[in-house]
Image 1: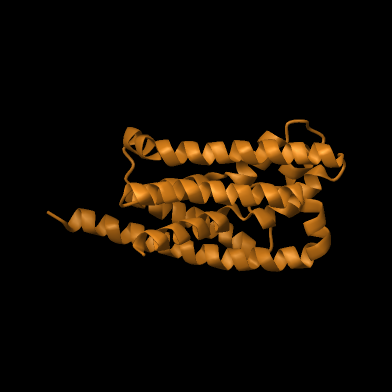
Image 2: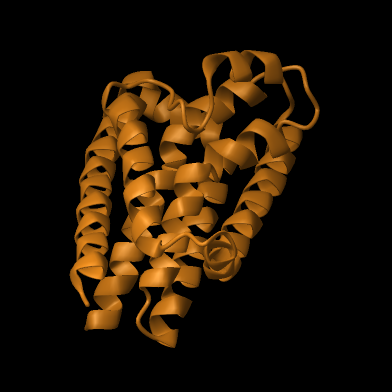
Length: 212
C-alpha cells in the first residue's frame, strides 16, 4: 500500500510539473505551419529526448548532488520555490517563465531544431522537472519505489507523446479556454506540491542541524 501511494504521488507530481496538456498550446503554435507527418516526427523526437533527460537525472541525480555537496533538503527547498513560481504562472494562465518565454516561442518558429529547443528542453523537461525527479528518487525508500519513479517518468512522457501527436485535434476540441482551465487546475495542484517540498525541506534541514 505504501509503495502504491508513493507511485501515485510520484506520477501526479511529474504529470503536474510536465503538464503535457498545457504544453499542447505551445506545441501547436510552434508546429502549425508544417505538415501532419512533420509534426508527428517532431513530437516523437522531442518527447523521446525529454524522457531520456528526465531518466538521466533520475539515475544520476544523487551523484550530482554529492559531487557539488548539495543536500537533498536544500534541493527540496530550492525546487519547491521554483515549482511555486511555475505554479503561479500557470494559475494566472501565463506561459511559464521556467519553461519557455514568449520571445523564445517567436524566435523558434522558423528553426528546424525546435524538437530540441524549446520543446524537449525546457518545455517538457525544464529545471522544475529535473528537480522533481531528483527529489523523488532521493525520497525512494526501496528499490520498488525507485522503480516506480522510473515507471512514472515513462508513463508521463508516453501520455505526452499521445497528446502531442493528437495536439491539433485536442486543441480544436478543447479550445483555448478549455486548455486555460486545465492549466490553472494543474497550477493549483503544483502549488500545493511546491509548498510540501518547501515545508519538508525546511523541516529536514532543521532536524539535521538540531540533531547532535
